[in-house]
Length: 314
Ligand code: C2E
Ligand code: CA
Ligand code: CA
Image 1 (cartoon, helix red, strand yellow):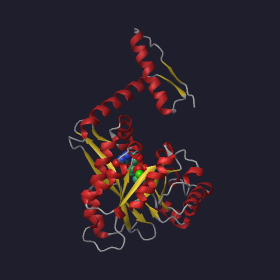
Image 2 (cartoon, rainbow, N blue to C red; image 1 turned 45 degrees about the vertical axis):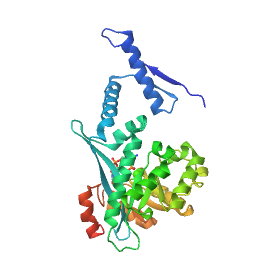
Image 3 (cartoon, rainbow, N blue to C red; image 1 turned 90 degrees about the horizontal axis):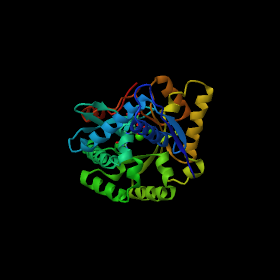
Image 4 (cartoon, helix red, strand yellow; image 1 turned 120 degrees about the vertical axis):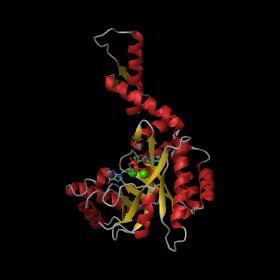
């Protein structure tokens, strides 16, 4: 479909140079394209300059972050709501830059997406997470191994060698396929639906499980959603945080849980922060949850202690 982006830059009261005005318009145009999917307008302001500078800095620094070993992985437990038993962990990338300090993935992952740098970063996280989960399951006699959920960016999902890369990473790490779950967002699936169905089929045929992340925040259509052979549905924090706010909000989550059941997906509630939310989710029949109520994402060392106990009582 055709699209149109408009940028507006106005001269300020000081001396005006055509070149800086054009540069400002260009910045606003880039932003207009980015945030409104190609159709919209943006008026340049000085905030934009600060933001642009920050993105540029992050983009440059990200290029060296892997070789300088600035990334780490934090793990957030996923628990069974009924008894607080830890069933697995979500791997979340962390970036600690010597000068910029801690930069949140919410800020740098989109920058890394833009440059494609997210692919090597995601690979690194995958390999780290596979090694950790192999170790955590080592010597444990559990019918069901602990699992690790790894986020896949749209970029990585689109890589031709995705499946090979995962096979190779797993075999190097000693992790078994039943231990790895991949998280994919709606928008990633919608980029190329036919290929997505095929890739997910391949992954599942190998024994991996796939979760639909941030469910309810993207633009997926139900007519497509049922085509994807998925295993888990992660109900976004946006809905979970409102679940006990009123009858309407509660029903909304109920509908999502019904949908999960119809599609034979295991629901996981994200961002559970209060016991009231947990109780409500339990009544609605949601089996799994993660959130600050149980635990914030923690370091590898802290995971050892959590696993030793095995469950989180709240
Ligand atoms: P996400 O995949 O939806 O991950 C869940 C986010 O919610 C995490 O933020 C987590 O720390 C946060 N969270 C968990 N429980 C609670 C809660 O009770 N309350 C609140 N307020 N927040 C909670 P984080 O770690 O900052 O990550 C943000 C996003 O960055 C992730 O959202 C994911 O989209 C992306 N991301 C993180 N790690 C990776 C990665 O390794 N690869 C890729 N491609 N993306 C990643
Ligand atoms: Ca996720
Ligand atoms: Ca999520």
